[in-house]
Amino acid sequence: MTAPPPAPRRSPSAGPDEDRDRAAHLVGVWRLVSFHTLAPDGSVRPGPLGESPEGLLFYSAGGHVAVHMMPADGPPQYLSYAGTWHLDGDRVVHNLTVADRTEWLGTDQVRRLELDGDRLTLTGSALSSPDRRVLVWQRIAHDGL
Image (cartoon, rainbow, N blue to C red; front, side, top):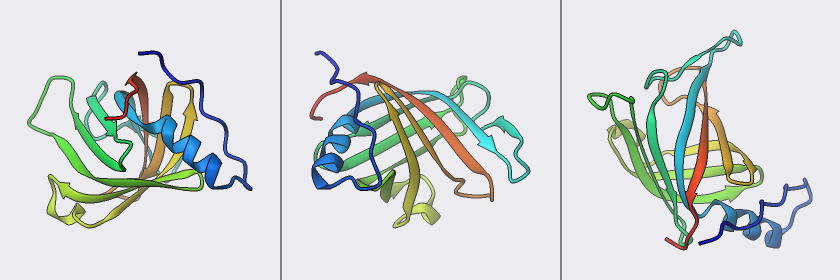
């Protein structure tokens, strides 16, 4: 299956049609390329899963999301959640209905979204510290899921 054309950049005055087009470009399966932490002092360090974590991110056309991540050498540490997703301007919101940590259940995880063709960068607050997390994903499949 051929990948769709690069997603349009969203302007501040983007309307519902542009949001719909942008959402369509998120649908598919994404492989984790990198995961790092930005500390409040501006320093950059590896994320909580180490230097080269493995992960998959799934966005369905029906508005469901699932995320699975672990260190490159495998568990014991494994992060996962699932729920629903929607766009809110230049952000994607994940509403967690299933999670490996009970304190995450029912929360909205808001990530700043940068989409450049088949490269997706999500930036947001850490779930357990004042740090910011930056996750870069590469599209591996685009379909209606």
